[in-house]
Image (cartoon, rainbow, N blue to C red; front, side, top):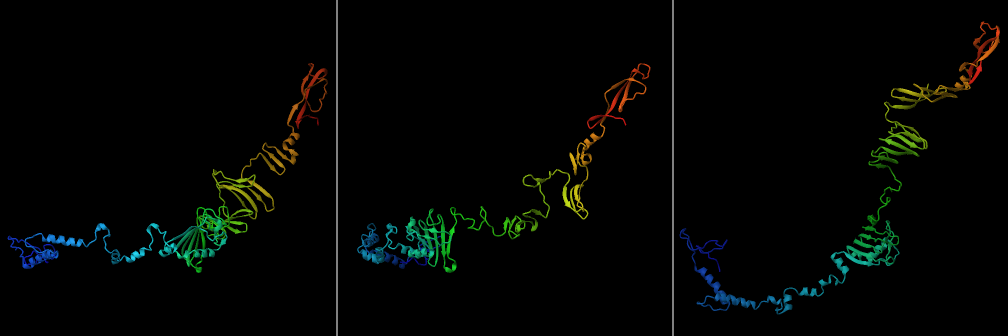
Length: 492
């Protein structure tokens, strides 16, 4: 069979290389396709071959022979094919069929294969199976580890693991039975005992490079640490094999575990810096600034430093400062009753209480303000002391040795034998008066009164001469008040 290939065929009518027929076009001068013998011979032989292959004799008057031939050929083929709805039941020789399709070996292998519905329960050697596929092996959820409660070394523990085939698996785990009497306690970890009762053991790696993790339950025996996770790593003797224990919310680290200073107190070895590094060195504490703080400067001596300069120190005799001490409060000395040096901060000037001295004035204690000195107490070269005030002294009582000066002006001293007021009272006339009046009668011309009396009046009979009994003189004594007593004046 072939497509039309005459010169008048329509080139590539049905695609590249697929010519077709054309009726031509008189308007364009295009010719209709010429039908040559090659084309019709091909069509004839293609059709006749199908009819004859079906065993049908060609008949010129019949026009359905091709259809009949196709149907007969299909029926003959169907008779030798399997029926779909038989699902292979109509295969004449089933063993030969399986062999022909290459399923013989598969069937033989299936006879010893695992059953899907067993979910792995029919695996003969589950450990070897896990090893072969590189899977983790959960060995047991409750095995007696060691068989008794006696102590174990790490080496003995690893030997037991090896006896269980642990290192045939890249990951192996088990859990110790919940029986203290049947499980060992590892005692040489260096970070706490491991009681294996109820503990979960996980092993990763192989004999020459292993990691073992042991998680202990919430209660334990044999001095074991409960609620803990221990890890053992051994990559060979040259790589520091050993145990460690992780801290957690139950087993919190102590200050000693992490090299910290406990809140209950302890020893700090080395200098301490708060908020900064420590530049003072030695046994010191710096605060915020790396060279400002406190430092031990010897036995019983605590140095005070500011910007690496020692500004003072404290020892068993007190606080010693080499710079000014400034305070917004007071300075108080004493334990029970205190001596205070304070400022109310409302003075118009600054005051200074100063101790100084020179050759002529060895010791001077002086009080000054911004305008000059107020007072001072001075020891002289001869050892005497002078107290001098630059202004008035106001006092209720002023004492100088045994002398006393009262604020009422009275003075007490040995010169007066006591108080000056008493001495004056006893030695000076405080008042003068005339004593009681007296009368002297019968006077004559030469009559004299006694000493200390003065005439205060006369009485005569009218002749103005004292010459009779009726003449009288009125007189009074002169009296002085001394020491609270009235004394009558005497004659000299």
